Amino acid sequence: MNRVLMNRSHKNQSGVALIVVLLLLAIMVTIAAQMSERLFIQFHRAENQLNHQQAYWYSIGVEALAKAGIEEAYKDGDTINLSQMWATEETTYPLDYGEAFGGVKDKQACFNLNALSNIEPSADPSVRPFLVTVWMNLLESVEVENYLAEVIADSSWEYMDADDVVRSSSGVEDSTYQSFKPPYLAPNGWIADVSELRAINGVTAEVFKAVSPLTCAIPTANWYLNVNTLQPEQANILVALFSPNLSESDAQEVLENRPFDGWASVEDFLSESAINRVDENIKTKAKPYLSIDSQFFELDAQVLVEESRVRVRSLLHSSDKKVVNVIRRQYGGMSERTSDNKAE
Image 1: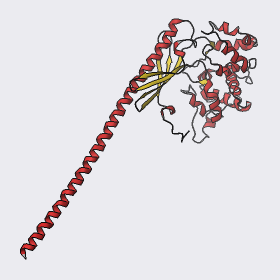
Image 2 (image 1 turned 90 degrees about the horizontal axis):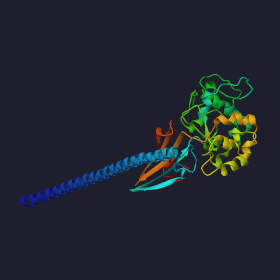
Image 3 (image 1 turned 135 degrees about the horizontal axis):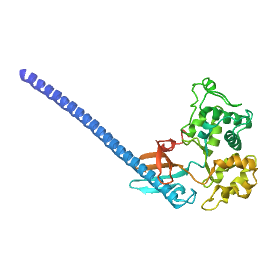
Image 4 (image 1 turned 30 degrees about the vertical axis):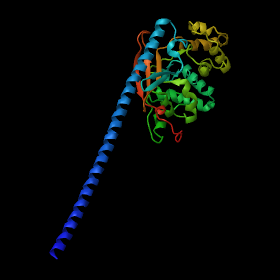
């Protein structure tokens, strides 16, 4: 009897020991699997960080290439025009394990909204300052209704001028913006990006989409339009500047027939037949805002290394037509996201 009980006890202990061993083995396998998973994640995290860092440094290299192209253009001639190396269409450069692509745009081939910040009212309160009128004309040229164009033009001026006093017939100041939800204040100074135009009274999404390709926000209160880099699809800027004496078709024709290396002087541009027919008073007002040269450019480029993507937008500036400096650099943007068409 005792032997039978001892045998049963030994078998029970052996079974318990086996269960304990299997349990320990299962725990060890689970821990090993978790460690392997964490190691795998850390490996990919390190790989992604290295790729992103490599893409970042490639973007700095692309920036240096853009600066070199602009500096070369300054050395080669007295004008900035679309025949120069910097002005090539979007270019793709192969890289180790990836590629870089993008282009450079002249930021003086657009209407500088910050030029509205330094405008004084006309002696006659019923007469809008010339640049405010040009801005209103530009809005109307993209089919913004006349009254809304007046509201946006005057409100843009009030939004960026140095005070909070309404000095225009259709503009608004802080009291209006404080009534919005959420409330905010006008900056009473320069804006940093064209996207800030959307905050101005009257600017709807449709208006912004239509006019934003023709505008820019560079850090200066001056506006000099480089007629040598203006594209035919931007002809509305000339229409607005010489309104009402220049049609869109005539402006496009002038730009399409532009000399290969641009006009040598503003006078040469003004001597074009369609421009020459413009009223002398309007030409006199417009001439100070015309140029054949540029100081501001924007690089918009993307770098892909494996699965890492970096987008850089750099504002480039030269004050002496010799050395080009980066005065603003932005990373990121909607084009960095690989679209799945669900949010488009």
